[in-house]
Length: 63
Image (cartoon, rainbow, N blue to C red; front, side, top):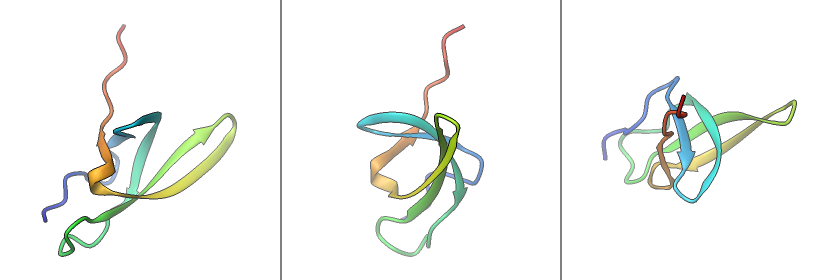
């Protein structure tokens, strides 16, 4: 499976949640690559690992 996202992309879980920045991409040769994403939970920097199928590009904020 080809990688859908690159480092620096702003993504969000398909089920919702905070906007996250992709900081590391997974192995492109596996069926569902995993990404490391970071986001702020209040003032604390959080990090998680997410399979590609669970993520989508974050929608831009309306101005």
